[in-house]
Length: 138
Figure 1: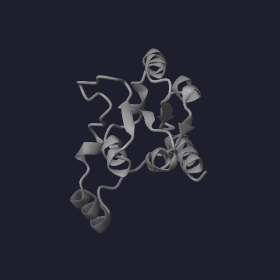
Figure 2: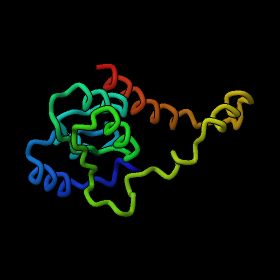
Figure 3: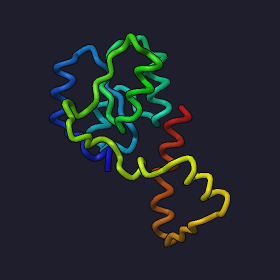
């Protein structure tokens, strides 16, 4: 849901407002947004791109939690969240915030809860995961 909130018009306006900024996007963003991107990558790939690229301004279309890591890794650079002035935190995934290290540990330890998935849904879900892995391996 996080990657579906970015609008083409808002990204276009941001690019006009910050013409030197590179626009980077997570591969789960919708196709029209990805077509505008200067770089597409997993969260880790986006972080590494901003760290290694000589550009000093980046428009970032992904979950907002990564912005803190980008600032830490490159404090001299500017990171502009898309959409701008997002006072409602709409680009924060409420479901991801429910995960904790303790919950992950207990799931792995007890192998619960068990999740069963319809084989057709499994096949459909596997394709975007494989795509993200392919993109992040570049």
